[in-house]
Length: 246
Image 1 (cartoon, rainbow, N blue to C red):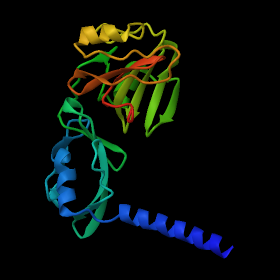
Image 2 (image 1 turned 45 degrees about the vertical axis):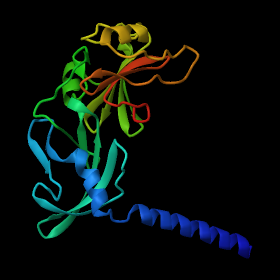
Image 3 (image 1 turned 180 degrees about the vertical axis):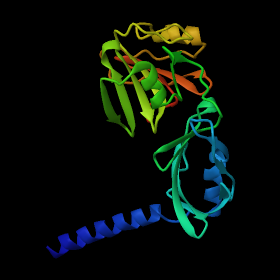
Image 4 (image 1 turned 90 degrees about the vertical axis):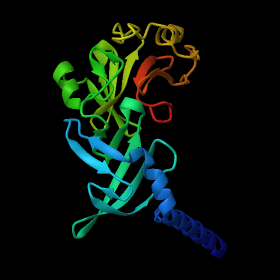
């Protein structure tokens, strides 16, 4: 029993040590590297300048340090900034590319790089970067809402499509098999083969996902930071370039 207790204490100690290491302050070099894709101005979905990130300050407030900074992109981390006479911890998550680069503040506030939303492809007027309020205005409430990998999927079951949100902005538009809708620019839909998308959108060859497979195709770029990928059950427009984040 003593050996078992000792072993358990060792496991607990190692776990506590690993957590402690994750929360350690980042070095100046790590901070500089992490901040690179975040530097510059960020606007709210209303078009207001909300955040200006500099190498040493956010909205003029000095950056005191950072922790849990992921070094792979997309990335997230927590910064400590001096706001007046108190210190604020601010969680930031940056993802996307080109016109679809976004910054999520404290898991709630979604910011973008441009004054106005920009997009390349859309489906029935639904585009990447659209807000929940805008979708509700044009399409009404969904039949269901499902939490999915840190996002929320709105299902419009009668029309066989879904819209995926992250912190109030559309990051995915999904057309299920049998959906008679199509993407506005390409004119293609769920019934069209990946090869048709490759030809129409000028993409490299897209691996076909057979009906009996449960995999996901590569995320093929269609330009402007937008991607298309396929499964046996649906085709999806996304801001993500990998299935790991979709």
